[in-house]
Image 1 (cartoon, rainbow, N blue to C red):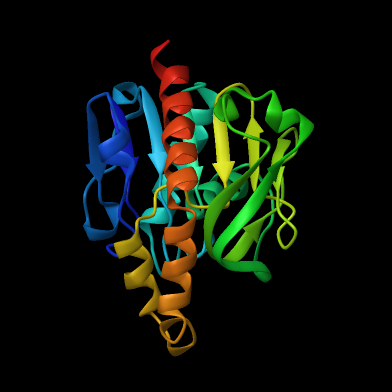
Image 2 (image 1 turned 90 degrees about the horizontal axis):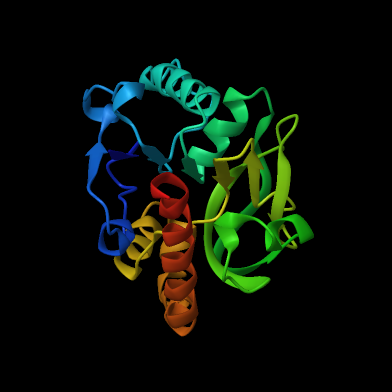
Length: 224
């Protein structure tokens, strides 16, 4: 079974369910739901969240989630971590996750590295593509990891560890409604809601095509 881990009530799976062609279960550990047993997982997607990857004291479920991520990577179960999910993958593997570094908000371009152009997660995706960014934390690449994508403001946008574990800094799952909700989190972004929505709307066609292809590529790694 494909499991999607939602870490935050305000960071939902967005367009993922509409683009999935396989059965899935959404797990909400932030509200006390148990994490799945690794034996039940054919693939795992871990979403973002307002918390940090090392905020285990405030959010104790993160400790168990990082152990599950460690087990998934060891077992070579396909893993896709989005924003916080990518940061959790990096932290689990011993890399630094740092706050207030390489921050980005908005619809922004990401550029694949040479390795990214040949990586199965990005098959059929152009080298420079539009993404949506909303992060104040950022990850270093774990030992043995391969850098797959960068952006002008954030050099570490995507990486792979082993044959089937990917971490992303950008968000391929957001919708206009999600962006509107996130903008309301503080005054600085609330004042720019119309600007952020207009930029996203202008790139929506290519953004959605890229997001759909990326998810399709990931699912193919689990069900080939």
